[in-house]
Image (cartoon, rainbow over all chains, first blue to last red; front, side, top):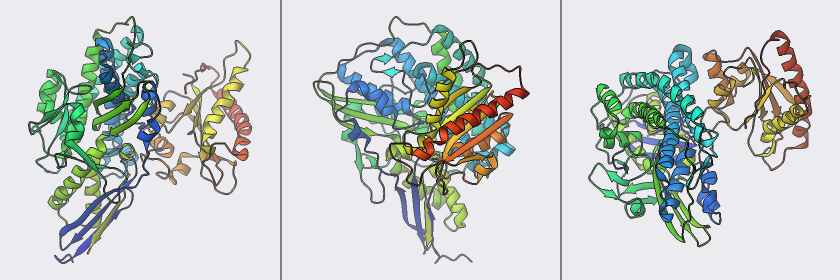
Length: 433
Length: 170
């Protein structure tokens, strides 16, 4: 018999289906959350220190190694930082190809998250393998989309994990027209899959969890943001990428090897839902209509709509990739020279999980004196804890431990945390005292 | 890509390099194949492929998957494994909760496993992760090469008309 004097402690020692290693500790006393702590115990990777003394030209290969899921994001933010210091304009072909390659990463990462990590929760399965027994077509569609994203990365990066085709100023080689045309056909064939995915994701029953959340994303003039622009919020603030440290403060939290970030002293959200909420009108008309047709009122304050936001971004990525490849032509040169002076360069791009900010101080020989990398998951950590507080209370703290645990895991997975990047997997412990 | 493939899974650390060492050894052997004669299979070195392993299996008629195994008492011992064997260890060593065992189990559910599949595991040493491959694990490589050649040749005898195009991808 549950009474209002029950005190509960839930400990999830390893949270599955997130990227990296972490745990959640929850203590409930007299039906109130007394303590809720996201613990990131994956060892710190000290990546910024590895970069010191290396040449800026090595950055694309080095930072790609931070993550096997979003290496392109790390490459692009690093390049963005150095090219901004060097005041390099890589030209329209390189910019278009970077966008194209980045879409590949969004498509593969989002398809992986929706089908293999998030979807099983909503249908009562403990894994995608169990779900595949009953929903093989759904999982197959996810695998097809993931493969397509990987093919797009390979077109420019030569391989999809830790790609090697990227360099400062552009690419080591331009894809042949024949390769680009063949991939465009694959993208056109996949568009129906992506549109069906949006309708499917929006049709999945999710809890009503509207929250008033501060959102941050790049504000790329005239475009759905990915590679450029100031950082803007839904509260009217806008600041340059170089001013990030004046607004975002990282702090150490006991029990976590990842840093927590606050924006003007408050938790905030980055990622697909933040991007979509802030930039719905920059989607191509066909994709915007599809987003509106879902029946979800955008902007949405419900993190459970993140899965639909990811599906919409897959559809957007495919649609815009087709547009880019319509006019594809092989350039005379696939890159321009980049000669950064001594100084500090700042760069930010929109990784699949949100804003990824880099800062590099270079000496006169182009060697890195210091580096600072702020990944999206550490920016979202404080928001995850805040969301858990809200969502668990709305869900009902007197629910059985197993239900509480599943709900916690769902809430955390909505953020698609990449703890490996932020330490930088999750274990849950609940105490009812 | 060839209908017949050998996938060596590894990482740059200690005995976990086994899959990559095997691929190098097979590439050397294939490189000495008589000129004008197509090699009997293609080889791929993979690094934590996750669900990407399914893509590497797609379209193949026969695949040998080779990976290092946790130490179980005899370093270098070669184990023939089934997808069902791997189900017992699912989730243990994959950082995204989706490693080789999960990828093969999912491929099985989706009917994407090749007609012929041989999964070979080699026990790592107890100390496991240094710079070098331990002598006992290195000594397993020639034996694996012989076993793989015999296996693929036997598979081939059932499907004499299938292409033998060779492509190496790392």
